[in-house]
Amino acid sequence: VTPSEGVRRGSGRILAMLESLLALGGLVLLRDSVEWEGRSLLKALVKKSALCGEQVHVLGCEVSEEEFREGFDSSINSRLVYHDLFRDPLSWSKPGKVLPGGPLEALKALDKRTGSGPVTIALDSLSWLLHHLPCPTLCQTLHALSHQDSCPGDTPPGEQVRVLGLLHEELHGLGPLGALSSLAQTEVTLSGTMGQASAHILYQRPRQRPTHQTQWFSILPDFSLKLQAEPLLESQPRSDPHTPSVDPTTHLTFNLHLSKKEREAKDNLTLPFQFSSEKQQALLRPGLGQATSHIFYEPDAYDDLDQEDPDDDLDV
Amino acid sequence: MWWVLLSSLRCIHYSPSSHPAPLCVPELGMFPELNNLLNTSPEGAEQGKLTLLCDAKTDGSFLVHHFLSFYLKANCKVCFVALVQSFSHYNIVGQKLGVSLTAARERGQLVVLEGLKSAVDVFFQPQEEPHPLQFLREANAGDLQLLYAFVRDALEPVDGGEAVWRCPVLLVDDLSALLSLGMGPVAVLDFVHYCRATVCREWKGNVVVLVHDSGDAEDEENDVLLNGLSHQSHLILRAEGLATGFCKDVHGQLRILWRRPLQPTAHRDRNLTYQYKIQDKSVSFFAKGMSPAVL
Figure (spheres, chains in turn purple, red):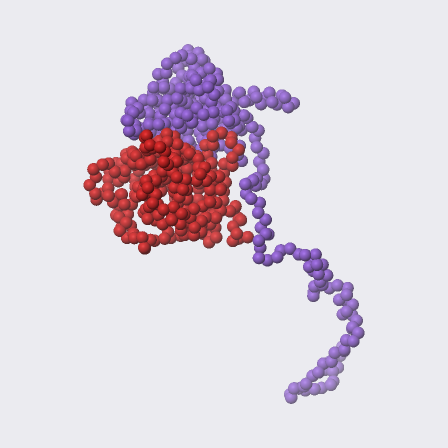
């Protein structure tokens, strides 16, 4: 594969990832976690839909409108309708701006959107809705929202409704997670390793087996998606660049280094139990001026001093 | 009820001369080193941020003292919801950091909700107005709307007057106590949501909250609260005890996690880990394994 072919294939895959996530329609579930957040991917999908000319309705519960619109240029922002559930979702405010019916009505109102053409609805986030609505109610409303007609042939592809739901995995038990999972046509689970984000995508096409795909990606500041190659598993973890490399041998109370003279003296020293040739010679030849040794013995009173050799009578 | 009785006992026994020092953590002081690690200073503090403090297997209250003195020095209007200790405790520690909470309260810079004292008032004083801790009286406490109203009234910028204080700051010590008092995690999350919407977004202020991490003890409600807040936070400071147990020279480990940067792929170190030792008036931080005592 030549580099240019690789690039072309790569850019084909870039389009393929976002488009394939949006292609199936219905409910696209984005599962994120504290470490790997999913709002950037949600915004990337929103941007992609808007660029395709669709109207995007955002039910914003967790971030303010300014924060959600940040990073989008005006062409995208003009197609984006933000339904604000962030400022006063439970009607606590002093002026008492009542949101009639609360979050449920706001969600149902999205179903009665005006205008024709394909529509994308982004729910930021499903976790907030799950905390404030009973799970069955939420599932029924979601189903009604993302419901495609029973005869897929009747609905022209342009009239598809896409619902993008952001879900924080750690906040819910297995029951609600499973229920939402079964409702979703596409499920994306975000994770990653060594600073590189990855998406595990599960496609559930009708009357077909579910298919899996794993993509490594990063999101650029303008919320476009860039595919990455899979990071190689390194045997050792990278050293933290911000850890100051401190030399532990400084500021010690003892000396770890040897000067040249000390090193020479150390090398010249013969160890007492090391058998060298000089030692051998010294042992074999008595040195000059070395007096022969005498043994002085004072016999005890009861000692039997016999000059004979006790072994003489042995017949050896 | 037993919690209220306990708190009333604490109030009765307390007197400035016999202040009981915290059992394992010596008194603390302002932490210029922590400011360096967080790349911030009282003059140049960021605004509109939610900071989550959490501790696991150790006492993270030194972080609360740090932020309290930090924002007072930064000339911000501070609303301090103090549910765990008495005002005098924070005052004494604050004096070691160089701020006087009493003086700040008198000049209107600091508004304190002393949970221990107020809880007694809820039961034993006639209430004309709704009390921020009203939920203690109710059998089926729904939400913390009254507590939010208290915070809002305390920090609301005065219309028409010139801005005396830099920005409003809400400090809560700590949210896990609200769970212990019977509030559900969703109710506490809603309270923080409204504080974020009003204090952070509308008034461009900051919110700092402390949550304890139950760790091995399976506390599902606390986990929901902690994870839910983690998703909403801009900065998470996590103080952890060492895995190997208590150590005289290294009191714990501090993990700093920046979330929700403005750019999705900002080249800012998202995750740093340092070890620390708490001393009489300061905390010293060092890289892992580089404590001066072990070198």
